Image: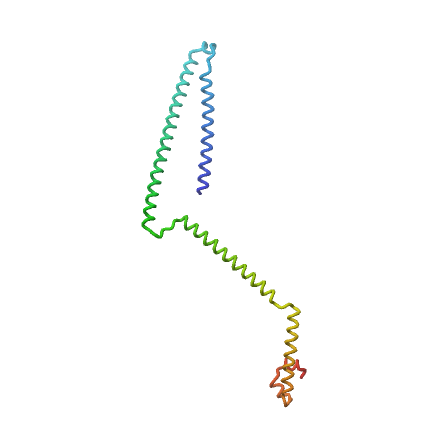
Length: 196
């Protein structure tokens, strides 16, 4: 909304400047016409043209005086507005200073914003560090993980150890009746031993 207002203000200023330039050009043309020497022939034609020129000159002088008065009043308004703004500014600064003295833990809004920005930057830094550490841990885990061939060899060793253990248990059973074997081994173990 502020941008729109500023844009409109600038647009109005530009239009005002164009109008002023147009008025100034018209006045310059008019003054040139008035100040130009009147040819003797035209002066001889009628006294009405002299009266008219005198009337126009008086009118333009009157307009000039009014414009000068307007400019002076505008300048006075601007000057008084500046003076008022300076007084208001000093009053506000004084009241702010007194308010800050009353509250010892006072933090200015500008300081709050900068503190928040610093905290956000610190959090981002911590998050980046945490992500870097996690990535490092993942890479470390990948390096420590056995390869596919190593895992296959480990599985074969595990299975052969399992079969050997089952075989030893089978050899230690005195009575190799199916009831005793069924009590000790399940179906999977029986398949490993080739008992079924």
